Each structure stands twice: as C-alpha cells, then as structure tokens.
Image (cartoon, rainbow, N blue to C red; front, side):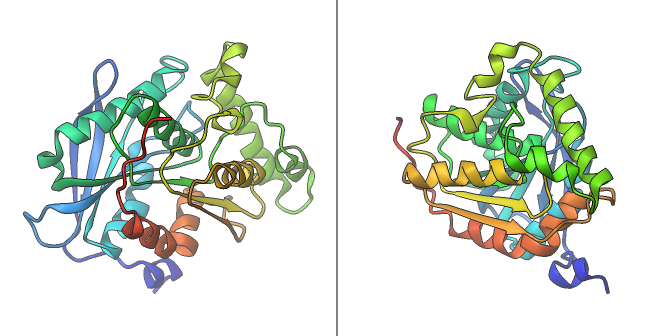
Length: 289
C-alpha cells in the first residue's frame, strides 16, 4: 500500500458526477465528489478551483485529492469547477467565473447533495488565487457567505517580488524543477494580466490588498522549496494582522518533478489538516467591510 493510500484511502461508496455550473458568461464543466449514504444532504460544500497558472489545467487534476478529501469525511461534498482560461479571455474573466460558480451553488444546493449550511472555497496555485479573491468578492458583494478558505501554494503576487520567487530558482538542489515553477508563474501572469495596471488590482493580487478585514478563516499551505512559499506566508501574516483566524503551515518539499506532485503533496502531508479545518469552519457570516 502506498503512503497516499495509507494516509487517505478511497471510500468504497465514492461517487463522482459530472455536471454543468453557471459561470459569468455561460456554462462551465464541473465535477461533484460524494461519499457516504446516498440521498444524504451534507452540511459543508467545498468549492475547489484547479491550478495551471491561469493558462492551463482542468478539473481532472483534482480527482485524486478531492476523492480522498470526501472519503476522509463524508459530511463534506466537493465541487470542482472550471473557469475561463487566460488564453480565451484574460483578467477578470476567471475571477468573475469563480464568483458566479459560488452564486450558482448557493441557488442549486439540491443538485449538490448540500443543505446550504456551510460553503468553503479552496484551490491550488492559480486556483488558490481565485479562492482568495472570491473571498474578497463575496465580502464586497454581499455574498454568498463563506465559512472558510483553503489556499494551497497560492499565486498571490503578480510582481513575483518575494525572496523565495527570486532566490529558490537559483538553488542547485532541484534547480531545474523549481525554475520551471517560477517560469510557469511568470508566463501565466503574462497571459492573465496583459494590462500592467491590473497587476495591482486586489482581485488580481490579493497580497497587495489593503482591505483584508471581515474575511472567512483561512488555512494557507506553502512548501519549503516552492517559489510561492513567501507570498503564501506573507498573505497569512497580513490576514492575521487584520484579525482573521488563519493557520499557515509550511510543508516538506513536495515531489514537484512528478505529474500532479502538488496535489499529491497536499494529500499526503496535509489532507488530515485540510479536512479538520473544513470540519471546524463555523459558517459565521462576516459582515461587509
């Protein structure tokens, strides 16, 4: 049995169901992940956004992670939703899609085996940027209320200005792999934010936002040798300073050289913590700023 299977086995009654959700300008593909008794309404919906540097990625990439997440706690149901990639339309198309998906989910909870009590947003890399941003948008636009945000190795700084972004690619250990991650981020931002003025917009660069109060509790995961590490930890520090209940954890180096390495890292080293954070989300609606 692999380490992943030992830490987070798949449930025998796991169900994956493809469906369409409503984006800002039309339907988007999505996938629902369920375990446990059929017909049961779950208290918590986790809406997940995939990685890919804004220019790539699909909902398929999260299959393993989200399957194991709901297997670990059948009281959670997960929805992985696509969004408009920058190759089709740049910022703010992706974030508008992400927020539209939350609104759709709230209105269509019966289709999601969810009772509407708690909604948590989550994402990895570019998807974690979207999860952070829709937390801001939901506060600014009066909903839907969010019980928590899970940001896994998030892209939060289009300026690529942190020490880890500048220095880690120069390290000899895993230099080629780390440099590829940094290069992917740079290329992704070029496609996503072709207008330089957008790079300081809080809905593009949450790290630069000066309004971080009244946001949902956050779990932020970085990795020891990831160029995104410092911006993740800086964002966590800013949330804490603004009074947001925030847990920041730096993971051991993930197997980035392997396909899906980031998702595997989240599963192996942090799935239990992610599941516990989501279970602990109290669903308290934060008042508008």
